[in-house]
Length: 212
Image 1 (cartoon, rainbow, N blue to C red):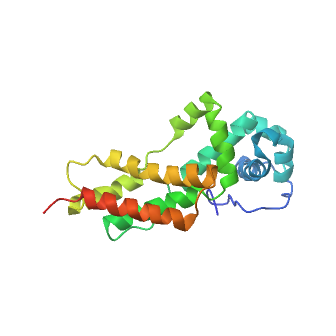
Image 2 (cartoon, one colour):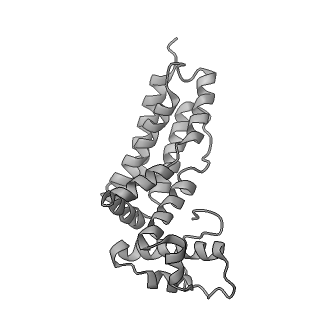
Image 3 (cartoon, one colour):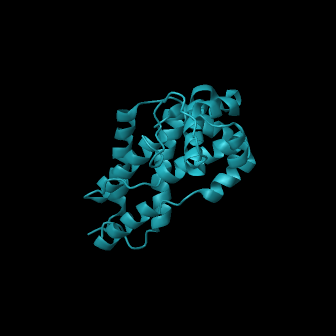
């Protein structure tokens, strides 16, 4: 899986050193290595030295590019949020399918690396300043809102429904089941949560339509 092009998330052996400094390539290597190290040993046990060694780069670049180990973790989380949670997902033929497809996409994003999700969640909860920075960078699910707008135009959603509030309600379901239940608590599995999503999507779609 990828957070963005040229940012592979698979395990790799130590990267060969970059002969000529290239900040873009160096940043990608450090983010990739940090994701792997944080996922394996957690934030506290991770060292900037081990991350730099895996990336094949000088440890000083972490301080230069990210300010600190915490800054590096923040960058990985932000990149994940920007590129995994805001990507395109398969359009649905019906409103119910649309909601289900979005939930499935978000769920996969939240559970792509449970170990890292736990590290990130713990770090955010224990660092108020970290939380504020992430909130400032957070993106609203505009892609979902635009899809919902199309269904509203077709009459599948009542005209008095606030689509932004609806999008947030839908997104919260993926957060609860993907992060809280699956990644943090280790409850259920993909099929179990898919059935939950199907029930939610069916119920919401049924209640949003115009009564005839």
